[in-house]
Image (tube, rainbow, N blue to C red; front, side):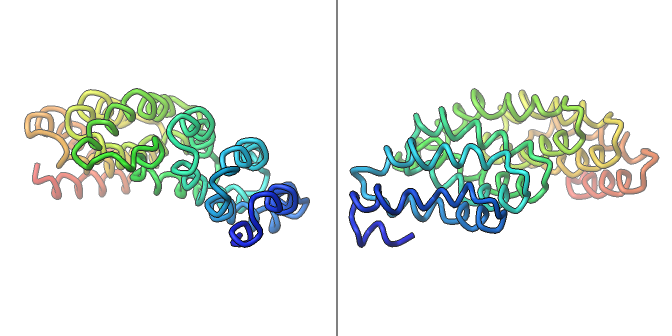
Length: 254
């Protein structure tokens, strides 16, 4: 992965980049190892050829691996894919990487979803605005998240697969910190409240845990919307649901 710096752009394009066909190797262990090096390799490419090489030769392989049959391959990719965003910039990220990011967010494998979710706090890198001043960052991130990410995340709350519905809750936990009170109250809280009636107990107790976003909300919302839901969940037939609901009531001092 450090050879591009040593051999220069021409040899890199003709000899090193083709080596990433290992991402198509028949052995999953080889594909996972190659996937794990994507970010580092791309970061070491010469600036004059970097974008072209990534877009024409690396990214097509990456797109195939998003739906790889082996969970370790997908997990390795999920742990580094966000790192391509600062390299490719805002427009390429939104057009080419975001669909892959969202696809992995719905993956059946918990480790894949976790690797993506753990990078949600780097959303500023995803939209290529790391260089902007800190004072402008919150407003830009909120606007982008509201238009692009949140609708996709909330749509998963209606997915027939309960694991995808749970992913919605995990994402809301992180997004609420990024987006603040207004967007959380208006766009995300109604989905969490509705999911309190989910038929699957695992979803319901994650609703209770998600309502720890309480500090993001104002007192009126806590009393009128959050507290009634938690009180109802304390009467749930499932022991875990009742436990987590009571715990959150205590934490929020409701």
